[in-house]
Length: 110
Image 1 (spheres, rainbow, N blue to C red):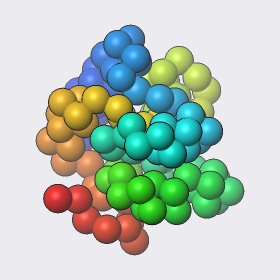
Image 2 (image 1 turned 135 degrees about the horizontal axis):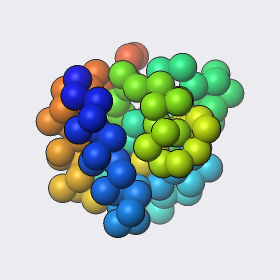
Image 3 (image 1 turned 60 degrees about the vertical axis):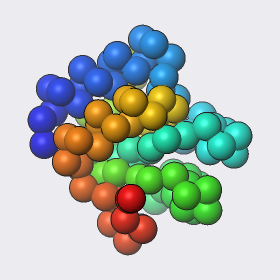
Image 4 (image 1 turned 135 degrees about the vertical axis):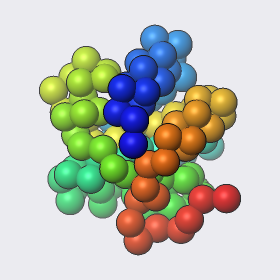
């Protein structure tokens, strides 16, 4: 995986408001049906995962892993972030092309 490219794409998304940051914001966007993709940190707390993953699965939002909470936090200017949602389909396509693993135990993406 190209970490620098992921950081650049997420940074672009944050600046362009094409990304929502944090479990609550990802949940809210998923409820509205506005997510093209979600990144869920591999080392996220079980409580955070339990809050966001079932909703994303129910809404059919593809989920990727392969990143840590500190990695996601660094990109968005926070200490640690458990989940990031991508609302722009073109940005989501670019992130998928990086080859991040599908979040384990969940449905595969199209």
